Length: 331
Image 1 (cartoon, helix red, strand yellow):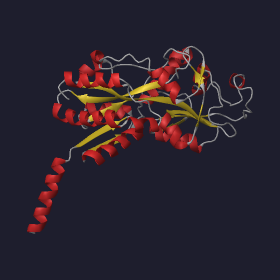
Image 2 (image 1 turned 45 degrees about the vertical axis):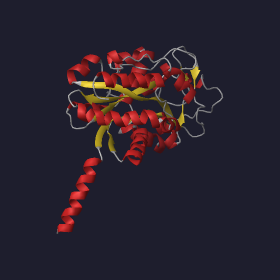
Image 3 (image 1 turned 135 degrees about the horizontal axis):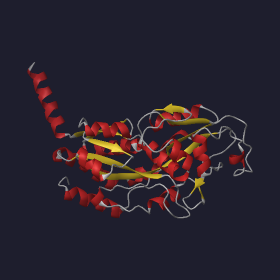
Image 4 (image 1 turned 60 degrees about the vertical axis):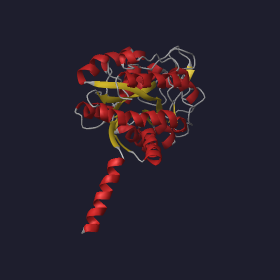
C-alpha cells in the first residue's frame, strides 16, 4: 500500500512539472499543430492537446473559456475581441485550393475562372463539359458528368475565407449566398472539417470542393488553376502562395486583423489565408504557457510548415507578434 501511495505521489509530482495546454478550433492548420505539439513534447516534455473541431467551434469554446486557446481561420474584428475579452495573433499562413476528382484530368490541368467557380458552387454550372468550363480548357476531354459539389457542414474559417473570395468575384454569390462560417448551400454534399471534405472528394468521382492545401497533398487530390485578382492564371503552388502572403499588412494595434484573399500581383494565388490564435485576456498565467508553445513553433517549426505546404510567418511578423505578447504581459 505504501509503495502504491509513493508511486502515485511521484506520478503526481512529475505531472505537475509537465505543463499541458488544451486548444480547439480550425481544421485548416490541424496537421501542422499536431506536428508542432509532437516536437514540443519531445523537446520540452510539455503537452499540447489540440482538437480539430472547426473555427466556429474554436471561437465558441474560447468564448466559453473551456479551452486554453481557440484557433480560427476567420479573424475576429477588434470590437468583437473587446466584447469577448480576447487577444488574437496569427500562427501560420495557408491556402485554400479547389480540389477535384475528375478521371483523366491530372493535377493542375483544370482551369476555372473565378466567376465560373462561384456558378459551380451555386449549382448554376452543373456539368463538367459546360461551355463556360470547356472554353478555358480546350485541350481537355471533359466528360458529360454532373458535378458533385463538396463543402463544409460545420462552422468553418475555411468556408469564411472561401465565401469571402467568391463574394468578391461574383455578384450573384454576394447577393444570393453571402459570406460566413456556415452557409445555406444551394447544392452539394457536406463534410465535417477539411478532412471530411477531402474524404468526400476522394470517394466521389466527378466531384469538386475546397480544402486547405495540406489536405490536398495528404489525399493526393488534383487542384485547379484559378485567376489572380488581376485576372492572370495562377496555379496552386507554394511560390504563388508566398507571393500573395507577402502583401499582408500586419499590425498589433488591430490585433492582426487581416484577410489575405485576392491580393494584388500577377503571381498571387487568390485564396490565401492566415490562421489565428485566440487567448482570454484575464488568464495571463495560462496564456504564457500557450505563448511558450507558439514561440517554440516560431523558432523550431518552419521546416514542418513548409513540408506540409504552409507558409511560415516572416521573421518580421514573428517579432511583431512577440512585441504584442510583451505589450499585454503574456511573454
